[in-house]
Length: 341
Image (cartoon, rainbow, N blue to C red; front, side):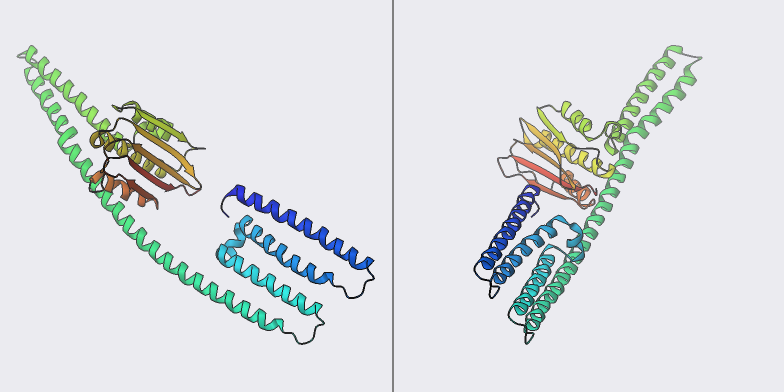
């Protein structure tokens, strides 16, 4: 019962049923007493209602107290164990009310105990298998993240070598030529200095673009909302941004969420021929959800290197990425990133 409203309603129902059972049982005792006493027959009704109310109380307790679920290895096993204990107590109550004698509830208790033990063994086996699968998934995702990081480092190295480094070399050469011409041909020296200034400006711009691709300053300074809004402002088509966050998520999650939005927007602008894009960012439980929808022609695929790298980035944080892009559109890219709160 994960829905909080449903659990509240169930809790109120259990409490109301308990009060109704208590009043009903009290009325039966009064009827018994006023009809001459004798064999205390209300005990059977009291036993039955106690079992029903006990079951409701245990369901409420399991759903209200996470410690119970942790202690008893999950909701299913906790409910099974609690129901077995209640049923064993009911059988003992029947034995007590039926005149004692041979303690036959022992066989019922033994059967219930064996069933709970088998359930516990099965839960452990399933949990171990799921844990092993999860370890394998994380191993693959971490390997993918390492590959993505290496690819990004190679891209940065290439961009520095082909871009800013070349600009800086040209800058140095122009300054050297200007020094040589300064005394002989001042006009020529001024031309070299102007070229050097242009090269310096271009190198600075390329370095800023490169730094923005690694971690945009607005994301670090102002957070996810303003950073995604800045992406939307510079888009060539209308972009609707809806962000509902109670606070800033962890830095790694925030960065991944930003690049999910940035890559999805870039794909929509370059390939989708979309006329509108909607970006929605919100928390769902303990996870951050980033959802980008465009009304373009669809057909987006992970064969696109950007989306493949995006999946690796998301899965490296133990998250998940869903891409739905049928031919004709629309395209939906949704990332779910655990926040660890």
